[in-house]
Image: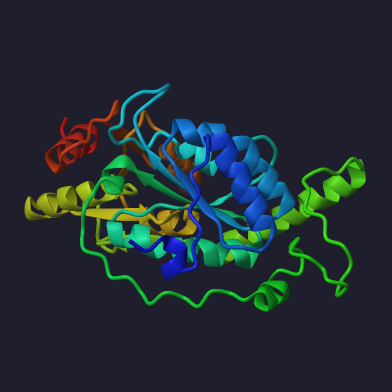
Length: 319
């Protein structure tokens, strides 16, 4: 059988640990290469230091986290409880990653290219944050043609900051997160924040379904969005006008989309596979001007559409 590098030029390495893996990504990405690693919840915790270092070094990379139930070793079954860790920084310091939340296997595939494009565009870390249900799902996928692999000269042009051998053609590059001058470190932080504001302006993504006439809004991402879509369809057959907002970028969070979709509704139900994390961002987006309630399952359990609809009725409709 042919090895990956023989057919695609891709190098695949098995790291000894998640700590080693994220630092190998840091090194490869510092050379201007497209590098990614994947993990599942506990391993994501171990990667946080390296991700903070990459954010401070402005190194573009892609990390995939397929969430499983916790805390601790927990279970191998689905969860969405890494939301805070992914969207609020995770590691130390003031930084953000672009966080993409797929709800299908097709999006899992599509978001790899999108994640890398955004990472190189903004010199940041991109993350695909999928719950375990999407991660273990089998669906048909349409893959685009493989992109041409960048030549060393193209890398030099695209990534003038990279440590890829100067060969007498440029000053020496140093990739580091260390800055002992307080004023320079503050200047770096202001630059990072300016980049984050630009990402918020340009890259926020959200799918809105039947929100033009809805009386109630469900906000959900990943597999719970698909479950909630079915609950919405059942509700409309019963004469209950329900709409759905599915954040595709969890960071930047689609504040304007949620606010617009919620402007005429009586209440919002946030459906998650956790104890209630994204609900905080929904409340901030709506400025708590209307009732916002949470419904979730934990420990690897997944709700049914009927459970979602019953929760909406109990919290907003039934006396």
